[in-house]
Length: 78
Image (cartoon, rainbow, N blue to C red; front, side, top):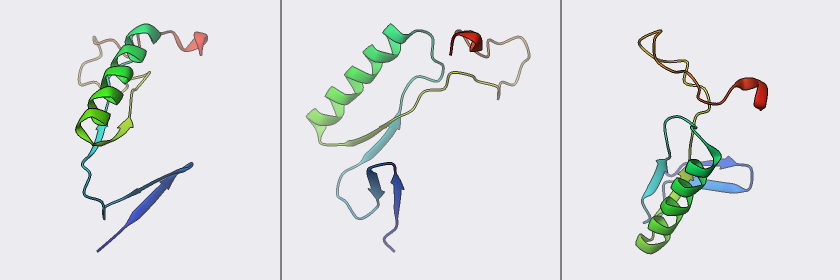
């Protein structure tokens, strides 16, 4: 069964031969680091003919301990 999902201008569907990666850092630690990771993932997926959805969280509220860092960037800065 072929299905598709539209995210803005991108259509994601399961009738392609390309593998789809949904990948990125679990927590946004800095703009410099997230741009470096994104650049490397884009280059890797282009080189290996994969599709990519880049995903990164700026606030990780789903931690199992209240002592872990939820966000390294204060929400006031957004």
